[in-house]
Image 1 (cartoon, helix red, strand yellow):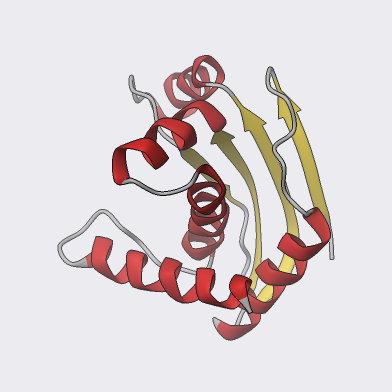
Image 2 (spheres, helix red, strand yellow):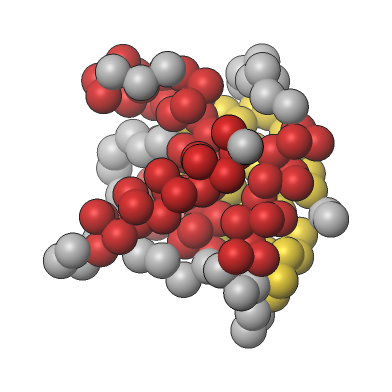
Length: 139
C-alpha cells in the first residue's frame, strides 16, 4: 500500500495510521476498486481556503478537497483535510472529533471510488456509504 501522511501548519492528528490504511484498503476492496497511491495532507482552515481558491476557484472553507488521479479501477489522489473544519463540524453535528476525522478521511476515498454528493439524492448515498465504512473501522 502506498500512503503518504503529511501536515501543513498543524500537529499530526491522533490516528493509528496502520489501522486506517488497512481500513481504507478494505473499503476500496468492497467498492471493487484497486488501491493506488494516496497522499493525505492535514492542514488548517487558512491552507484549505488557499487550496480551494487556487485550484477550484472556490472562496470558502471546507473539510476536505480531493484531487483525483484515478485511472480505471485503480484509485489514487491527494486529499487535503482541514483539521479546523473537522473540529467545528464535529461540534456542529454532535459527533466526536475522532469520528468526524475518520468520516472525512473515508469521504475522500469514497469520492475516488466514484460516489458523488452534489446532485439530488447523492448526499444521502454518500452518508450511507460513510456510515457503512465507519462500521468496518469499528470491527
